[in-house]
Amino acid sequence: MPRIRTLSPRLLRRRAVLLAASAAVLLVAHPAAAQELRGEVTEADVRRELVSRPSPLYPVTPPTREEQQAANPAYVPEGPRATEDEEIPEASTLTTLFPDPPTDADSLGEPEKPETPTGVRRREKKAEAKADEPAAEEEEPTAANPRAEKVDSEDEERNIRVEAENIRTAAIETPDTAAEENPYAPLGLRLGTFNVVTTLEQGVTWTSNATYSPVPKPAVLSETTLRLNAVSDWSRHSANINAYGTYRKSIDGEPVTDPSAGVDATLNLDISEELRGIGKLGYSLRREDADSPVELPATVTSRPIRQELTGSLGLEKDVGKFRFAASGNLLRLDYSDAELEGGGTLSQEERNSTLLTGILRTGYEISPALTPFVELEYGRRVYDQKVDSGGYQRSSDRMAARLGAELDLGEKLTGELALGYVTEQFDDAALSDISGVSTSAELSWSPERGTTVGFNASTEVEGTTTAGESGSILYSGTVSLKREIRANLSLDVSLGASWRDYASTADHDLTLRGETSLTWWLNRYAGLTGRYRYEQLTSTLPGRDTAVHNVFLGVKLQR
Image 1 (tube, helix red, strand yellow):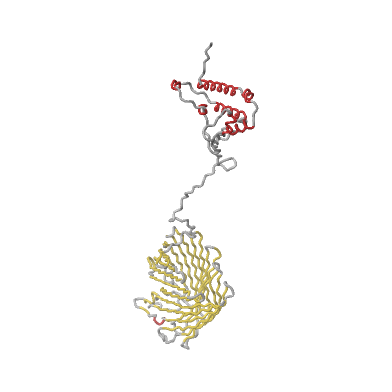
Image 2 (cartoon, rainbow, N blue to C red; image 1 turned 90 degrees about the vertical axis):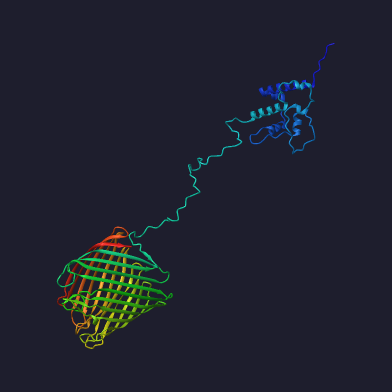
């Protein structure tokens, strides 16, 4: 009887694996045959394929127990039943489903284990999924880490530079400053609460008549002038100080020594919104003009030095549109002795006098640009010597009345002008009164930027010590023009005239003068200046006609 060979379970399992592998290779190579072998595709099969299909973005979801049971009817679960939320470990080999006890054959070494049916089934699903996917040209698979679009796309502006966040801040020590209106204007010096501007002018003057005499006597003189202007920097009140000093001395020709100096200060006090206080003080020293109405002996070689002291205190009050003002004024004249030929001096003490006046003014503001006013003045002139060398009492009472207007058109036109009548009555009845029209004006007009036109007019009652004469009235007027041709080039022009009317006689004097100067600034601190002046005196009195030409060239320094 033939012997029947019995196969062990392990050998049977190995042959089943080899058979399953061969069937898997056949299915992959021939999908149509696989379709025939698989039979009809059910909804459960489609669902299993969708569930088990791998995705580059999401991990593969393991099949449920029911799906495994439907796919493999021989599948027998082991262990306790897992819940739906629990994960079922993936079965990689049949040994996991059918564990065998170890045998002696295990130690002999076995060939490599073929792929399990589960792996074959997954391969089939992957192959079917690839067959169902559209071509690569129609739709590209989505990558797990897709690249972001470029910022500089065609719809956006290309090459846009991102603005830096750490922008450098400008230094505090060098802020942006506005351009200077006049880069050649002096900076000034800070002295306390005042800003002081100083100017020094040094040059040479040629004159055709050094002594202003009828007979011309030319000379070359060295001329030095120092000027000072101080303006306060106060929050409420204000003050202004102007001072100058000039010294002229001959270096060739007629010997001349001519000093002059002056200072004037103004203080404005804002006592209240409608009440203001004004104080003024002035002093000047100069040699008496050659056209003085006082006749001196021919033996006088040098005219006396005249000192003039002025001062005033006033209050201004506004009541609605009415303007009220009251002021007290002081004028002190003092003359030094005149020098004579051969030595000696001639006293001028009898010419020294003091004039005290009080002025009341009432105005009404028609508009901010125009304020008419009426002004009344009364004063007393007192001579140091009650009776002069000629036996006359020259002290007098002074009275005046004026009608005028204040103008205020901003930067275009400012100032005031007035017209009235003035008289002085002497204590000595032998002297006739001095009376005449009184004029005063101080206007400033700016037709355009950099150009200023000024007009000044005044009336002065002059005394004399000439025997039998009372004195005279001097009317003076000046028109000036200041023009900034360029920032470093300025032009000054002035024309003036004076008319002297003698009270006791029909005589009169006419003086005409003109002056032009040009200053070229090399920088803020130094410049070159030139000046020409002409003056002519014509008189009805004999021996008084004169004409003088002066030319100056020098250097001007300022700070």
